[in-house]
Length: 331
Image 1 (tube, one colour):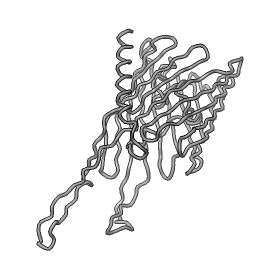
Image 2: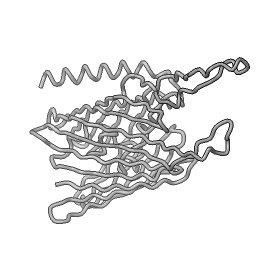
Image 3: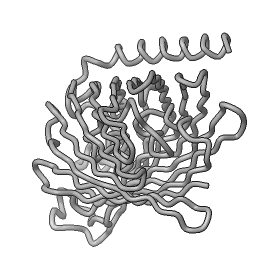
Image 4: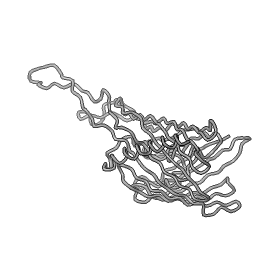
C-alpha cells in the first residue's frame, strides 16, 4: 500500500511539472481537440462539474478514479450529435478484477463526412474526396486505497488524421476521489505527455525551382510545428444536500483549467428519485462557447441486467442546442 501511494505521488508530481510547462499557451495552440469534447450524458448535463462524483466507464474522461465506484461489470456507449457533420461517440467497459482493483477500457471516436479537395489552381474542387477522423484508445487501472479514497491512472493512444496526414502518440491521465459522509472531493490531471509530430505525403510536393532552365523538379516538403496536447486540470467538490427516503439531491462544483483556453468554473445539480429516475442541470462559467445544459436518466432491470439510459441537451452559444444520449448496463 505504501509503495502504491508513493508511485501515485510521483506520477502526480510529474503531471504537475508537465502541466505547468504548458500554461502559457493560448487558444488555438493545441491539437487533438477530440480530447476536449466531453463523454457521457451525466457529465455533460451537469456542466462538467462531476469530477468529484464520477462513475462507470464515462469517468475515464472526467476522472479515471471513478472506475472504482462500482463492484459490478459495467458496459457503456455514448452518441453525441456534435456540430456540422461531425459524429462523436464513446464505448467502454469497467471490470473489478480483484479486491480493490479495477480495470477500464474505452475507445472514443470522431468522424465526419467526406470533403472535396480544393487547391489554389482549382478552388472549386478537384473532384477528389478525402476523409478525416480521430480516435482515442484508453486503458485505466484503478485502486481503492481505502473505503473513502480511490486513485487511478490511464494510458491512451491518440490518432488524428486528415487525408494521409497523421499525428499520433501517447498521453496519460491520473485521478483521485475522496469522500467523507456527504462530502465528495475529486481531482484529475488529463492529457499530459510529449508534443507529437505530424507526418504524411501531403506535406511533400515537387517543384521546379528554375522553370526557365527546364531543370528537373525538386522534391520539397513542409516541416510543421509539433502538436501540443490539451493538458487540463480539474478539481471539484460535491455534497449530498438531501438524502432522505426516496429522494437525493446533490450539488457539485469544479474548477477546470486547460493550457489553451485558460480557467473556467462548473456547477451542477442532480436529483434522484427512488434510485431509478434522475434530473440534472449544469452551467459552465467563463468557458467561451458553452453555458447551460440539462439532462436526465432512467434505470430499469431486464432480468439480471441493470440498464441506465441517459440524455443531455447542451447549449453551444454559436451552434445552438446539441443532443446526446447514452446507454449502459451492469451485472
